[in-house]
Length: 219
Image (cartoon, rainbow, N blue to C red; front, side, top):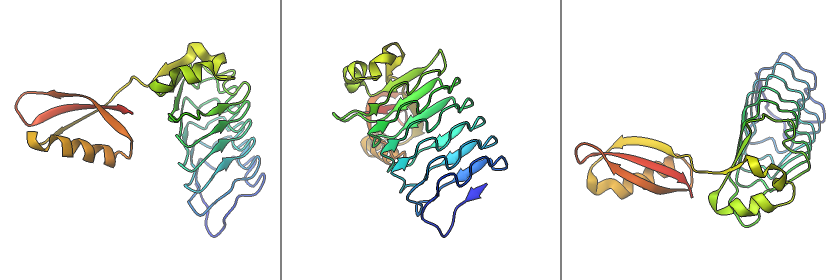
């Protein structure tokens, strides 16, 4: 594992061709990652990008063929060109709501990538570079906020993936027990603990008055 301490940036190519590392945790005091910083780290499996990174540079994780888990911090604004190219073990990626641009070929040839979740539901939708998802799984689904469906489907480069775009209709189901009069407060509490902006889609009373099934969706 790599835990970075007492520095505030990662230089260009700093860990390139390192085949010993499996996990990288980039803490919040790191504020920049250089070009090709982790390129060709053949055994890298998991990365957690810290809260103060704004830009994932060009080819940062290119050819990390065993990378299967990526957590992108909420402050990231841009995923650079070819950043995750040829990450063939990656099957799911969540793009945080603050990301304004995904560069060209960012996820190209990630041939197992089948689930992309876009959280940006603002009027200024996330911009997409050329061939950002070219060569991904034939079963690729790009999940976008329902109210931005038309915006994404008609936007430049996004329209190349019109048949892959779906809305966020899948619900997260949470079961818990509480008194009926505490229903509204408990729903808000659960949403806050999950750190998501949610709206209640349905509330179904099960047997008895104290057990409910709550279904949330990003709203």
